[in-house]
Length: 487
Image 1 (cartoon, rainbow, N blue to C red):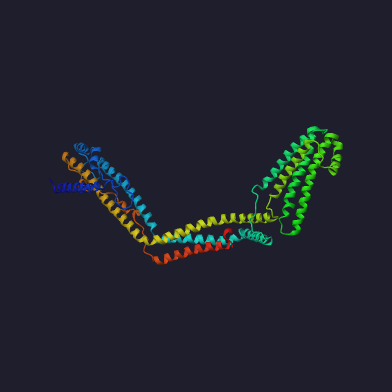
Image 2 (image 1 turned 60 degrees about the vertical axis):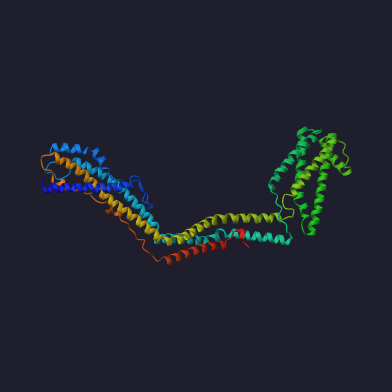
């Protein structure tokens, strides 16, 4: 045996022992997390199973078969096909693991960037300055949008207060919740009264039911509308503080109610006159009877007609009286106040709800940054240590990859050497190496510019920005307070 062959055998044996030790060490940690906080990819840095590869590639039998053919030739300068299969299989696994490593290192770099005092300070500073600028711009824009509404509300509020003081009112306004449904009820009253009265007037009318209903509609409209207007105006005037207005309201109310009674009495007399004299002569006869003896009614239907009209008059009068606050003008000034307050409040909410959310979020972010930034150096050091440990693990893994590949190549070459008659190629004595290391790639190198800036001035600046954000918001809310907060 030559010295060169002896050296080759020693190199192969050494490679086998090194690979076996490395594979054993990685096998103990396979499938476990390192407790470093980094995610572990399933199968990440898994050991290479040389026995499975040798069996899959039929390495022993292939070496013997190639030796019988005196392959590879003694003068070969590169790996033969079977050796290339071995290195390709090893390289494929190594490449997959290398890409996984780069992903892990990118995750570490991303985490480390989150603990950059400079970058976090700059982000919070820009966020705060943007919020301050937005609030200052709104302070300029708000007078054009909220100013007129605020002024209208103040004027309506002062008008309401002056009205209460002038008329010595201390009670709240009595609003009618169904104020505008009153007109629907009046329409119903007119319709019902017209139909009921129409049946009474139909008897004796030359036009029958149609003529009776036509007459009844005219009386019903006059009855309901006039009673409503009496309740709405003169009856409510009696609530005024001014004595003259009170007396005038009382007189007009009495006159109006008397006129309504006269209308119903005329309707009853007219109904009897129509039955006795016909349509053409009924009107003057009813008018004469109303002046001479309005209480003389012989037909029970005419009494029903009078009672029905009076009942509907009372209902219309009451709806008119309760259509608004009993004190004339009180409801109107109150509605103007409510309308102006709602307009101002709605536009105020559109503006300030968004601004308050911005202010709350920015101030909260600043407070969290001020509280957490002192911890960044320690957290960054922890991440760096974890990353360095991962790099050392991969460095050892690449050494194990080379050892596993050389173990398989050594086994193939030993079997080939034992069966061939010609000398083995010179490269049989050379160890195989990885084409490069993933640790030498550009994106595997940590660009760490976190440094150790002076933390005190940065935190002081953030506190000042937080006060500036609150101050800008308070200036805006001071100039345009919510209606409930206005003095």
